[in-house]
Length: 234
Length: 385
Image (cartoon, rainbow over all chains, first blue to last red; front, top):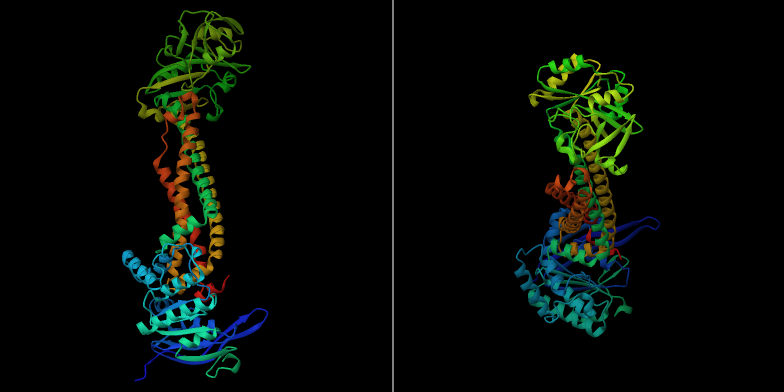
């Protein structure tokens, strides 16, 4: 039986109006459907609009035109308060630059994602330490990001993304700042987690080895999405 | 990791910025406490002599004068309109006047010479209790005088010394009239002798009368009755003087409050600018927090809590510093009345107001930067470097 579409976009566009450079179409009329539990990878060069698409899918930005549906919710029709709920409960982000809060320890960075949803601090810490054990940082949870390697920082970011058990995990160049070995480890971890918990993953990257972990591959260039991968990318 | 905890981390992380913001509040609050307490100390020092005079005393000058001109400095002017024996009798006849004591005041080369009736030992320009050396005057004394202690020290006068005021006088006593006496003079002589010695004074003429009323509650009515009885004279009650002085005092306290408010506003503006810088520096972090599910109000709370904590720290330190400064100011103020510290305690309400102003100022300083940060979408915030 085919899974339902958890992500659906129709004619999704994001246009940036720049003062001196006119309009830039970062995302151009994208129509996309992602099934629940699917691991989708979008390849594409830098500046192709992958991050902007991911931001639109995760409710971090609002589209200029078109629609994004997450589990049946039309994001552009949601109020800011409702959009916050989507970001809290339905979507987990992993960024290329890790995007950890430098003043917070590993466990506090994970806890920060649980703060808006779990009122009890001991429960938050319990869940955070479980997640850090899970990503292999059980012994480093009280270290600041600056005291950890790039791979370890990305593991914290993954633990944080999975903290609220979201239905969708969005990976924005998750291996971009990592060497190939560490990048593979990170991708394996995301792949394993998504399969264990039935989460849907959308990863955007220009790292070719990522396709080893993916169920479906798309290609993005100049804001448009293609099913055909160009030869130079294969 | 709640907004409060994150705010405390940010305060510890940005030590120099925090120190700058806190210092602004410390200066403002310390100034508020010091200035207001100093103004109150000044008020107490000024009011103390008036309280000591008593509410049952009226001073009546023989001529029209403004109260602000002061008693002894208008002494010569009063000679143009002297009181004679009839005038004193008129004053004594006014209802509620218990005692009307005639006094002659004369001033020459900054020295005030006063003639008193030594038989008046309860209501007078100088009383026997003021004698610190030698003796008080007797009604049958001739050319002998009492001199003020300060004046005696300035001119090396002791009991037995000679002093000249138109005539030669022998010093028989040193008096310490202090600041609490209504008529402060340098030299006190027997009234008939003074009338004889001062060339412009005719026999039995005086220019001031010190009046004690039988019922202090009727002092204002008595003063009005005296004014209608002697229209060219000027009556001054201790409450008149207190009102005049307290008007000046109120201006002092109002000025202290105004200066403090200006300082507090400057501290708030400084903190707003500093917080705007802090928010700009961590726009990306704000984007991260919003991306992981923090709401705009969580972001606002975090920045406002941070700013309020800085205000609170500034308030506490400002209160401690202000308390110290205020104590020192009171300690060194008002020597003549025994020091303002014996009259005024540092008001805990002022400390509470100071602390409250700092916290509210901190909150106010955090509102605009937090609003500016919160209105960014997570994607916009994450795009910043």
